[in-house]
Image 1 (cartoon, rainbow, N blue to C red):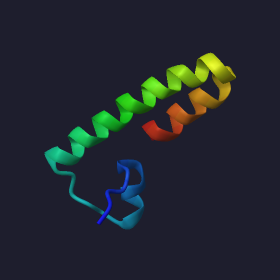
Image 2: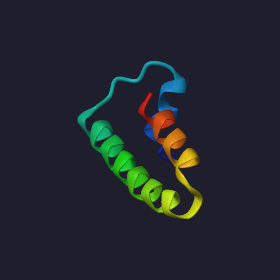
Image 3: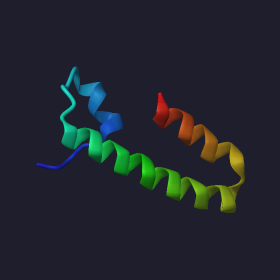
Image 4: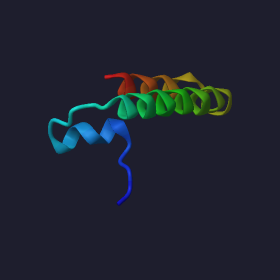
Length: 57
């Protein structure tokens, strides 16, 4: 059984978020923010900021 990323989980219907899920989501967002910062350095701002927007919705 593999773990779905939190932003994909909501497609599978209503899942009650446990504290563990909330923690994992924070880690995912932090990791994305870190990689997004590197992406911005390489590829300019457009793609990185659109990625950020897509995740935060």
